[in-house]
Length: 85
Image (cartoon, rainbow, N blue to C red; front, top):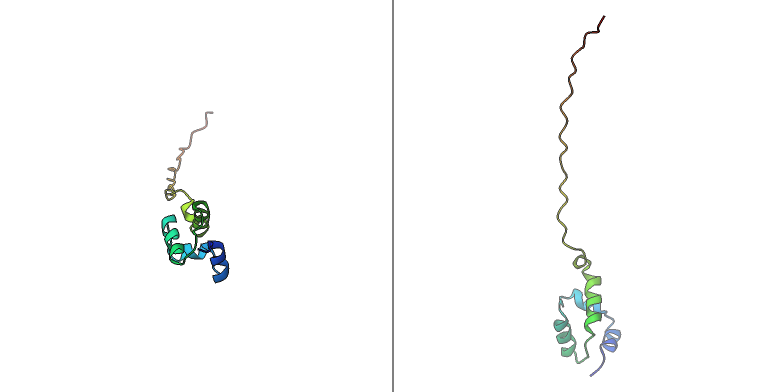
């Protein structure tokens, strides 16, 4: 059995390319390389590649920012005050 580094180097692909092809779990990565007769990368290497390909996984789900509508203040109506004479 050959190493995955050799297979990747020989075929000219990267782990990122394998992840982009639809491999989304480490078990699927192991199966991908097993079919090709190679050892699979470690789980840490898979996770690093997965996060490079899918950076949105890192970002926490954020609530959409709802802009608050600012209510206009009612105009202040001042009545004329009579001057004291």
